[in-house]
Length: 149
Image (cartoon, rainbow, N blue to C red; front, side, top):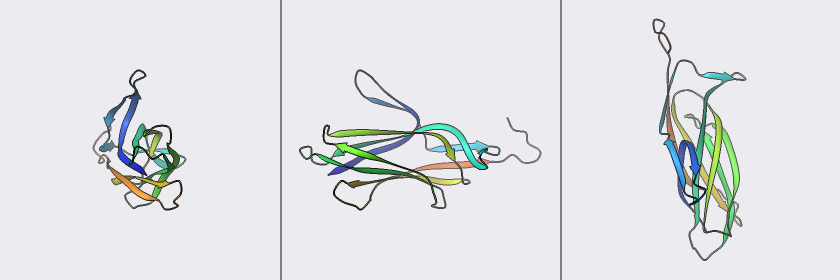
């Protein structure tokens, strides 16, 4: 069976060519935005790039397995803002790392945003919750007398 080990949201990540170890740079727990957010096609967006990195493994090292993963970004209201599905293939190796790069963060106001990680085994149709990673976003709009810097 597939096992979720961890999921981390970070500014970026690098993989060492010699050791295949990953470095997670600037783990994101909170973002504070000063001033009105940037808009793209009329929708508010934080213009940042970030990675969501997940490590999957086999719960039984001797049993090969495959399946699907789904990563959703949920607004504080629970509305899905982004969704990505990808395969989990643990037939050749006992662990698999996925790294999803995002360019821009869709914004639906201040609050707790949630990266919902789910998976399903190859032979089973039901999605199982694996993790929920929270990111606090606060928007500080300057009052009339303040200047933005």
